[in-house]
Image 1 (cartoon, rainbow, N blue to C red):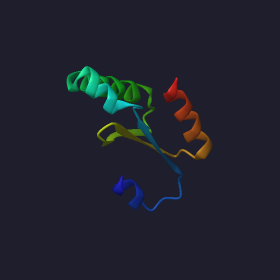
Image 2 (image 1 turned 45 degrees about the vertical axis):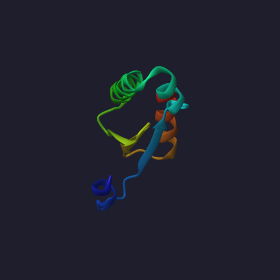
Image 3 (image 1 turned 135 degrees about the horizontal axis):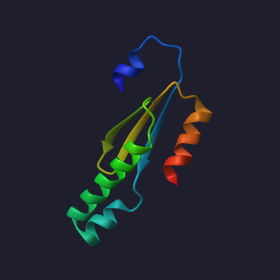
Image 4 (image 1 turned 120 degrees about the horizontal axis):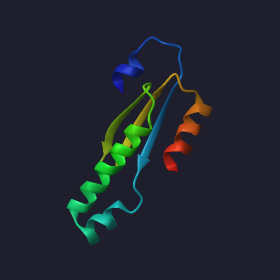
Length: 85
């Protein structure tokens, strides 16, 4: 992220943060192995949904960051909606 923000460019970028609701409850009730499988599944789904202009990174224990190059607010909102379906 630092490298992208440091670039001298006028092109817009969008940053999306995607997390899993009630993830702690999932880990507590179904176990960490199930939680890990859920994270892997979500990461694959996100990665497969992104175009070549998108980057995916784990941001926190249950959160992912999606960086979209050349994506204004409207484009970022469209991608966010697509990721949620």
